[in-house]
Image 1 (spheres, rainbow, N blue to C red):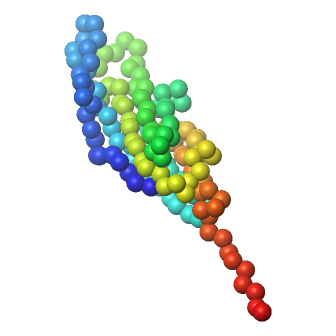
Image 2: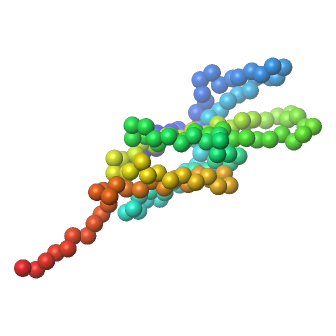
Image 3: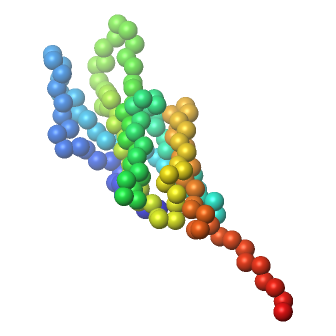
Length: 135
């Protein structure tokens, strides 16, 4: 599995305007990811603080795994931010997957801002013990 991301990237056209507001910079953040591999497959843990299930998009296409998410940072009623470096964090990460992994059986769980992806190896790619007979 190869990581195809950089530390942080700014999207092209990263400035968006809303009526009556100052320009808002949209910055794409690279979430921190831990990857563990064993003979059964890989488990990937991605930190996505403030992300809800409806704002998360996980896709596999042409051997690549894509994670994109939008965080929701609520502003308390009656308050207006005076300064916010990142108002609506956008997360993105891409990985290339080996053909040894069965992408049709990926399991995804989002809990407390942490995405856990379990990607099993194909049965034929798993190590197996060969019985040796004496003759």
